Image 1 (cartoon, rainbow, N blue to C red):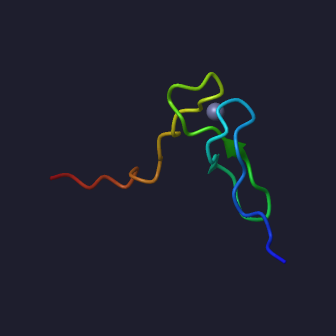
Image 2 (image 1 turned 90 degrees about the horizontal axis):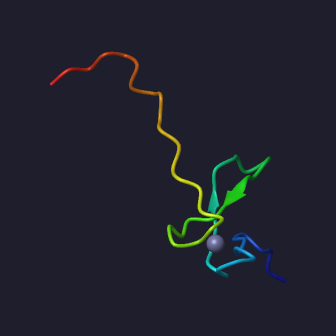
Amino acid sequence: MGRIVKERCPHCNKVMRNDGTEAEPKWVCNNPKCIEYVAVPPKEEEAGGTKE
Ligand SMILES: [Zn+2]
């Protein structure tokens, strides 16, 4: 018996991306051509100030 790990978009039927956590998944479409597409949220982890 296999658990469904990936969700598929109801619109484009492509495998969706999980923007949430494992305990609280938030599935969003990862297909830029789909109307349900959600852009990757910008990470705010680089607030430390590492300059190059
Ligand atoms: Zn989609």
